[in-house]
Length: 250
Image (cartoon, helix red, strand yellow):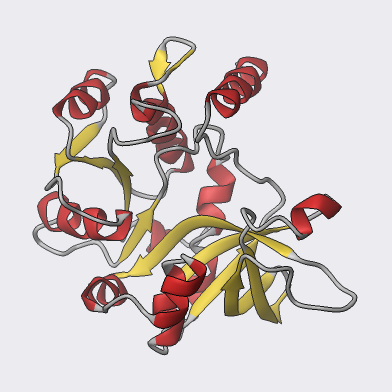
């Protein structure tokens, strides 16, 4: 991972308590630590820049700071994580030193540090506005599952795609790999500033995929292909699975 990128990067982890399927999700206990702290630990282990949790809940901030990490308080009315991290960025980095902003979801306690680092690689190309991740889908059922978002792109290098579309449908058609999109993003600072000012786009609203707003506005998103699919925790069953996975690692 290029040292120049690492020295100019900040990791922001949006976290809020509102979750219908798993109430209080960021503070869910995993082996004595809140889930949000596990995510911050994985981010710190990636060693790509300062780590901040962006939250509207004092209880989350208190738990994060008790574990030795930094928290930034944000407004409660943000609709998306991107909006939340943009506000947090101004508070965490008021002098605008960070050129690359990592938006790491707060419900990925099992994400590998090397997976986080891989998301920076596409930004070596100055034409790329936003970088994200994908992993090849192996399970046939996942290929037709609308809850599995697929990244559709054209190869520009080994394990590197330029994104053409993101969809809940099974795409592209025909022989060849399909890629599961991992919702971890790295923005150039001007790209994040531009993105949060855009209005929701027609395809974004139709597919319910925020990243389509950037593509519809002509922004370039590239996808680094990785091997490990981090577990997103949205339900009690997924929480138990995360506990089991992290128990084996420890």
